[in-house]
Length: 254
Image (cartoon, rainbow, N blue to C red; front, side, top):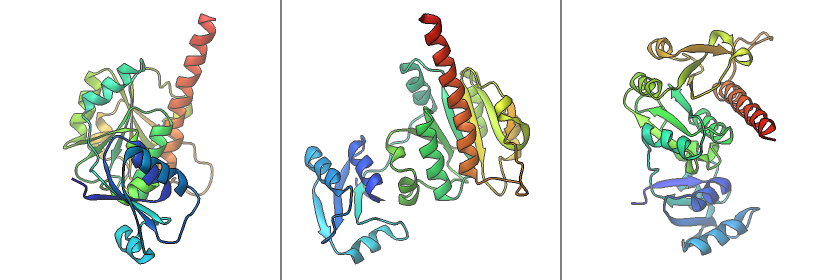
């Protein structure tokens, strides 16, 4: 069933390259902006029809999401289980790296976190069914199509998800203001990073279930960072430590 919409050049192209079905691509009539050629090539390769429509039609379809002259109707994202995320890590021969979003209600923040998680090499993102922005066209566009390439799991209870990850051997790190400097934290082994909302942060019950609280050094007068920016810094600290460990193992083998 094709009842969801993605909008924007990168988002539509990644949808065409991903595993979920694309029903139809819609192009603004008379406009051929940069990037459309590869979208048309992907449509041809995948056998996906495309239609030219007036800008007003695209505006209506996309709502507040900037469509850049391109949109597509797609099948809903297939959510994955925690077990599947762990299997992805195992299949790559890597220690699990999971991101958990607690109360991220802004679609742009959620999309940016998903994008950074995918770029940093995370194996999956876990979202609560409540207190989370839905995976809307805005989330998809902000993620630049990363939703197509990263396992996304929805759970009824984030605390129970944390307990499941702990049983699988992961250490859970809560990104919050009153923790130890993330640069001084050893992120070896299986890692789960919990990111909270800008206003409320990580909820008390979730924070209590985490093993370590990590923070970022703030030297200015502003006492907090945008949620997605803070998440990006912590996630790339994990990624950098993993890359350094891989290089170290490579030198030992050499």
